[in-house]
Length: 191
Image (cartoon, rainbow, N blue to C red; front, side, top):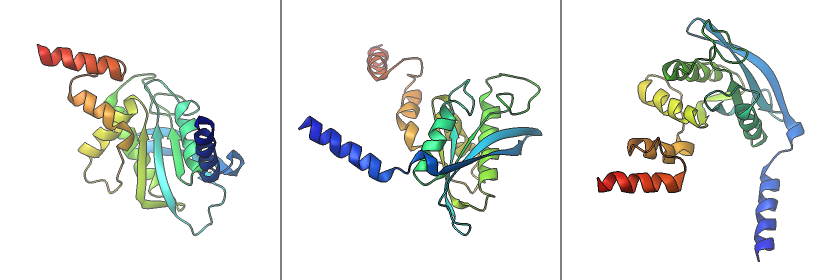
């Protein structure tokens, strides 16, 4: 039974996934607060010139750069039909910035806003269907972007980080893992 279930899952994934050879990528740049952000745009190769696809901004964990996790996720999203943008935050990777390797949530949120603005100008992207995929700390930056920038017309989805945001609201951001977070929460409630 387990083998049948696994085979069914693998068949479904194979049926819904385009092969990696069918994704084109190109280097892009856009401004953010006077600096130049460098990114990689992943586009499904079968995108016709007059077709607008949903877009997704993919932002990685604290110290990662676009060639690491965000690039891998962006390529996978393009294989699934999205136009995906992975980028280096200001001061990280290829992006400019006078201060290098600084973890600044406000600055990173501003870079996500700039990425959304840039993505919405591309001819292959539907400006009303831009999503966000925040990994690790970037999930919080995505939420902050959406909360503080209501004038931006680009909706950024937070579905992938609902558990993390729930934990943060409950004061569990210092606890690691679901089980430990549940224990921490129970201990704090008992106090």
